[in-house]
Image 1: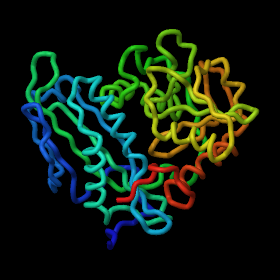
Image 2: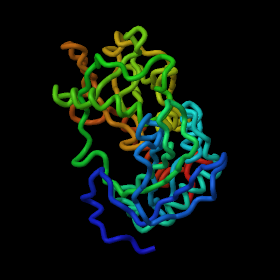
Image 3: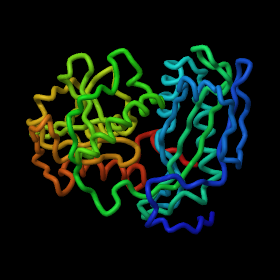
Length: 340
């Protein structure tokens, strides 16, 4: 397929409208078959549940052009499972897993001309989401919902090269111990906006949120999981019921163990341990791994030996291996890479 005339090398990480999106509606207790639509606009009641009570969940994933020219996406079944968990937690109807994957693949296929070419550093970002669409004025779940999938080509997350981040230990809480921190809901991201803007004003790239109950354990940032490397080469990530189960993080832990032969462990990580780690990174769909060079805990600087100029050696191996799997230059585990 002939690609769109886009300056792929200079794409930013922003929204570019593509030609088609998948739309399905839930009414009278059932989802319809859904359609591929060209209209990017949504018209809903001013009293729609999503507008009044933030009843909305979403996912984030990507499509790639592999080294041998195929269009693929990465582990869409896990995105489907996570959206199911998110929907159940917000009293929303589940969009079936097989239908979710089918809708994602259809939407990518319909917009294949927007999938950036291999080697460009750009990818096609895919956003499935669902929201309560009918009018609700009393505090209760909606009766009608819409599920949509749209795409947008995005440039590399690290424009101009990888620069380790400086983050701060945050005084705001991201999620309550028995709240909604483990699901991908719009409300979680809305409440993090003030904290991230405040961090930027203070000169930091991101926040490190601690557990709300004791404020002694590392949880995550507003939009990514943490990954640490110990001085003896073990990969560890925080364990908590209020952390979003990142698909990238789970994949990296598998890569560490099965591809790189490293020890990998998910456990509680205390703030007082930070100075003992050799490397730190933030992992998620957008960048795979963003290296962290420094954490500032209320004036106390914790500098990782990996430094402020480039990724640490273990973080880089993890990044290169996972992106190699995604781009088809390294053999993927069964079911990880799905061809469109």
